[in-house]
Image (cartoon, rainbow, N blue to C red; front, side):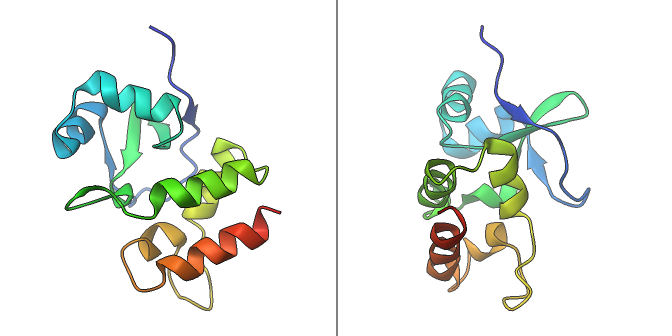
Length: 121
């Protein structure tokens, strides 16, 4: 099996991460499918304590958060690498008072996508 593209764990320790198996249960898919989503950059993952972890904020009650795939695509297509995209998603936007991963679950989601488009150019 090919190794997963995992970012270094540069996130604050309080950021909850799910294991591949926990993410699979949440998405109601196999662990193999979650690994494919990570390899295809439809999910970003990091290495926490030597194990793959997917930030819980990338999910909502319906699966992967509605705007997550779009915002990651904008960042990666705009020149960010996986590590930079993950850091950006967890960097607080001072005027919003939250980081973009939190904004995925708020009325600020579209604003964060606009900011990603502007920064990724």
